Amino acid sequence: AQKITQTQPGMFVQEKEAVTLDCTYDTSDQSYGLFWYKQPSSGEMIFLIYQGSYDEQNATEGRYSLNFQKARKSANLVISASQLGDSAMYFCAMMGISSGSARQLTFGSGTQLTVLP
Amino acid sequence: DAGVTQSPTHLIKTRGQQVTLRCSPKSGHDTVSWYQQALGQGPQFIFQYYEEEERQRGNFPDRFSGHQYPNYSSELNVNALLLGDSALYLCASSLYRRNTIYFGEGSWLTVV
Image (cartoon, rainbow over all chains, first blue to last red):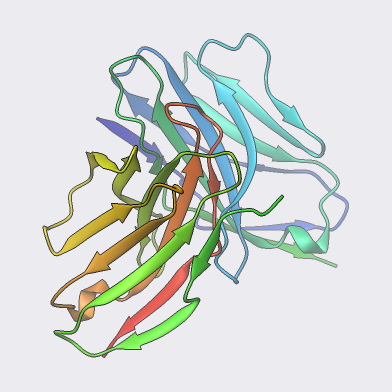
């Protein structure tokens, strides 16, 4: 079984500043992947960044980086230099990637990020 | 390179009716998964199709069924609609057992 916890229902950040969105997880899978998605009000789920449980380095994709702390079971998303267009709902998700794992995403409840001008 | 496309984008159905939602996966992808996202919640996995067979299923009743065609496109069917089926239905595509998963824009279903 897998569980994702996002404890921040809403976050505010000033434009051009950095913001960290928290995500903790629990799983019985030995190998797993962690994902972050952005969902604007239109509904589309936009892939941002992926971290494998055995990746030694934290993943980065442009202004997005994933602060992966395996011992703490956390996978926080850091957005640098926030832009007004970053205002959206952000979801943390995970999936078991072992040979016998069920390849389905388990999502958290999301964090609504608002970037202030 | 077309992404994941879904249709229709919005629809309204009456309780007890049936609905079919459609999804075309991203070019080159062979696996389609469906998720239900109720208002204010994260998406919940419904089922996954690969090689025209249902490979995995989440905790959804048999009223939810699906199909995958030889061109990898997929349908989600929901029978005997309930008010609680009102949600955003998201289609996700990937290569089978690969970790890159892309979503479509979703189909907003309202049951009245």
